[in-house]
Length: 428
Image (tube, rainbow, N blue to C red; front, side, top):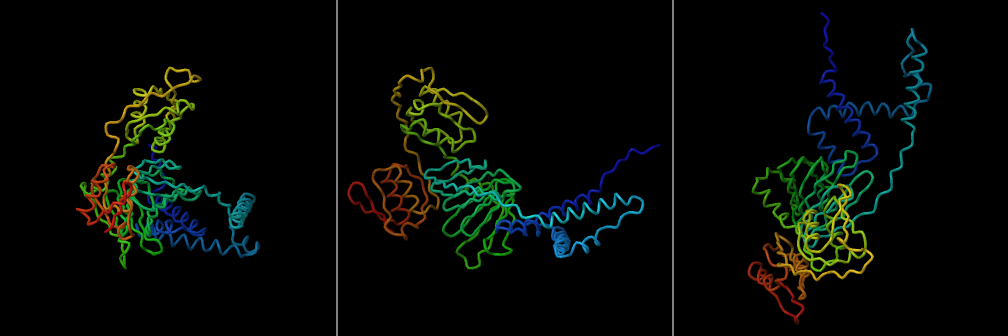
């Protein structure tokens, strides 16, 4: 009886070929130059499995032989190619010639010029913000955070200048996503993770997938951090090391509690401006069709990530209709009106609570003051750098300057001196 057993290559052989392909890919990237984040990822790959390092060494030796062939004359190079097979000499000769041509082209081809880098994007968030970055990744910015996003052809890089951001990354194998916070680099491996930059430490909490955390300029410092783990680096320590521990559910909830309050508050804000703010927070984009619709003044509060709630608010209270053009676009217009006619926007209702609560968690006083000043006519002034570096925690109404000053006096030993009706100086 004939056997129908059609077996493919053995799994071990397939795995070996995959390892060799991955090792060769790393060697090629290394020869063209690796960034610190690339070096960290390579180091993490090498130490994750002993076979990785063995395969890398074997492939590196083979690539070394190929590099040596560059210096051989064509006569010696031809002598290294397989001799023609006796029965089909023309086939073998053609194959040898094709191999020689391919090898020559590979060794001699000029490097491809990299595409020009795109302009950097600078983002700040005084009251919390949800951003869609140009590559499609999401950045949930805590209050007082600041980032710079570089969307280069070979790498996506975020410089976290201050604050805390939760990233939900669109993975691209050929363009790694790297976050740099102080002297710490975090590279995405298909991930969602939170990064907090403080004056004396950097904390990374991985909520999905994995990341590689490394200290810039320190060889061999790379550590792999998995889902549910938190990495911490004490940046002011003499021999700072990356400490990793399994985060409990309570720890994770506490670390990410700030995300629960990310509402946008509009007070007599033009629809054009409100739509622009919502577009920063959502993949689905709102488009205002004309200037008259864009001039409608709206008031209210809505979750930054809820397009449906925002559209419902416009329809029920401000006479603005919405038309879904696609999954990624909603067109806003004045409902039932001649767009060529003049339109006087109705007086908007005053929101019940126009002042949001500000939540501070080990926030430098200078940053907390900057947030309070956004909501108040009476401005707070920090007397010196030492006062501005005091870390404060607590909750306060955004327009309650007296409550904020009382919190500072009772809980943090910061005194306040009034200078007229519009300025208060804070001093430790």
